[in-house]
Image 1 (cartoon, one colour):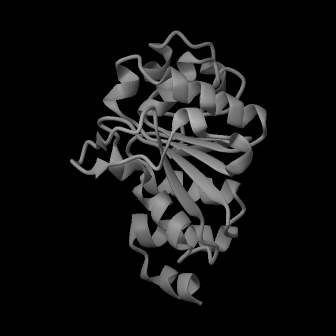
Image 2: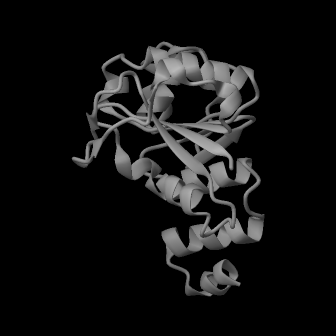
Length: 199
């Protein structure tokens, strides 16, 4: 079974990664369930923005990228406060090893500060949000809901469905027809998509 490491920290924006984690863990849409493992900087519980208390499955220091197939980074005030260096370093290790990293909202700012967006196509809330970090990647900014830039998947805070879709696409877990249907059901509420998903 493949493994998705999910970084957890205070004020994690739980709604941003919810669609993705459900589809990975259950495999209800892809037919391929994954193991979802939460990772904290320490073993202490964290509380998400939605008030959910999460006890990390493991600590950051024990993560071996060779044992993982994806790193997921959600937004949080944590990133906007200039924190997250340890998770950005982990993301660099994953990317250097050719292992996908999926980052949304504030996490993109953390990766921008670490220089991980400078040479990769990416998106975020708005370009100016990332420019405020002092990063050098503006030429690679793409004004889309979600962007796959090689092994890096990025999205803005208003695009959790597109984030899930782009990540599932990068992982090769569904074809374009099924991905269109997925986005149709959860984003446009297109009833014509249901037979494709269950068929």
